[in-house]
Structure formats: structure tokens, C-alpha cells
Length: 169
Image (tube, rainbow, N blue to C red; front, side, top):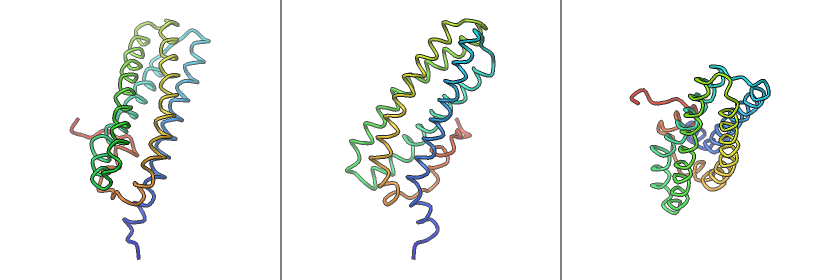
């Protein structure tokens, strides 16, 4: 008979897909809000706050995968090492885009009606959304089964699924 932890472990791929869906929802909401603000030729602190919060959430999710989940995954399934290496490489690319979005959001906060800055943020978020979609789909397809059968959650899931930064950072 499976233990309660086995039931929880069996749902990890579903939790990962839900986390990805929430990140997709967040970037879509920011893109929609940004579109409205570009039409109105206005920025405000709320847009900047949302952009920065999203950047932090996605970075925290990826940091949790890189620092905890992937090491456990590769120990359980060494055959997934090339897949994990590709996912970590993607995380680096995404981190570069997130840094650019954060930089532009800070710039937009200083230039209250700078439409050009909003256009640049929109372009970065469009590219980010496309990369996220490809990355998330690949990750779910390639490691979902291993999550359900080969990896026990010994605490790593907090950052991966709940997007909360560690207190010691």
C-alpha cells in the first residue's frame, strides 16, 4: 500500500504543470496590462511592481529547480543528465531576459510616460513568453514521468511550486 508521501510524489508532474500554468497566466496578465498602458501612453508603479514580482517568481522557480530538484532527478535518473543540462541552459537564457525586463521596468518607473520603454518591455515579454512556452512544454514532457516515479519531495518543491524565495537569500 502506498504511503501518503507516495501519493504526493505521484502528483509532482501535475504540480509542475500547474506552476507553469500560473507563470504563463502571470506573464499574459502583464502583457495585457502593458498593452493597455501603451495605448494610454502611461506607466505607473503597479506595472513596475507586477513586472518585478513576476521576474522574481520565475527566477525563484528556476533557482529551485536548479539548486534542488535537478540534482535529485539526476541522482535518481542519470539518463536524464543531458535533458537537465538543456533545461539549466534554458534557465540561463531566461534569466538574461528577466534581467532585461527588470532593468526596463525600473527605467519605466523613472520615465512616467516613456512609450518607447513600454515597447521594449513588450518585445522582451513577447520573446520571453515564447521561450517559456517551449521550455515548459519540453520540461513537462521530458521529466514529468520521472517526477511521478523517481523523485521524492524532501522539501525542494516549495520554491519550484510556490515561487517563494529562501529566507537566507
